[in-house]
Image 1 (cartoon, rainbow, N blue to C red):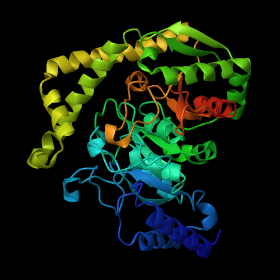
Image 2 (tube, one colour):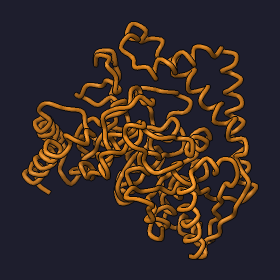
Image 3 (cartoon, helix red, strand yellow):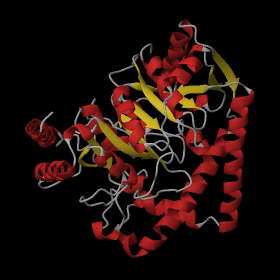
Image 4 (tube, rainbow, N blue to C red):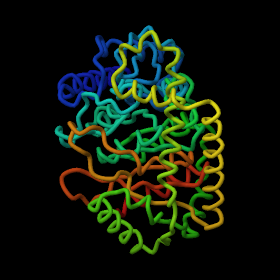
Length: 416
């Protein structure tokens, strides 16, 4: 690809947003988007050859809780951009240095929490794309970008990916730098990606995920030894609605028919306690993060204010006790998977298909425990549908085995 071809690609991409994003509203408005991208390409090519930029021509969207130069950052809020003085996100910078072009900031719910925003599901405009990485999922599903950054503190990558019929990948906690990303709950925040295909994950992963090393031979050996999948039966799974469980059961049968070992194991019967624990921790941390923004609290929306009040009601002593339980939970699940010889868990990505837009962004409770444990997860589309909206299969791997998770998920995606 030469510079003229790249400029033509940029022209078409920007025109596509201008002509087709008015109803979906996946991107934040931006004046002179096209010229900014032209200038970025010129700057990239001043000291680099096109062949030295492996991601040149890859368009990405970035959730508006990431700092991206020279774009404003407002975190889906009514606060002025001047309130957010953050360096550019390290994860974004790494992709930009390889030639990826930020097509724009994608819409998020306020401070990545539950307050509804204007983004609609491209598959059906009457439905939500999920939250809080709503714009990122919608932009990928509509084909505006190849890759979008999102974050997950409860279910904000897996859920919108499922609702929009695409792939949501949440690496192991801590494998991606959160520097330059506005925090929700630092102890629970995960940086992840939303894409429409595995090719894009493989193409980008080594640049934004720390110590990415997909040893193909080792992965092939692990896959050939017939990895063991487990379904966590019990109270956790029963949180999903009947239609979702029916489609999930059919999917499990399909996987089983290919000779893949699937255990059904009683697990997460304490899910109510984990849900409450997780929500208390994130409430406390959310309140602490927003202490420094008190002068702007009159601009906050209702749900953010509610969460701050909830967090303020938790004492530091209680918070420390909660953190200790959280760390114990992480250790327990690691030991359980090891002792039970479980390579992967599988579960529905959501409790239901995408709700109507007017009813909110949907429940993240099918994702919450895995986020709480800090395990790598991926949501892939299930071909079977009850209506015209998709469902996702959530695959959960062992801590740090993200490369294997991606490889096995790609294989599963071809049969479900």
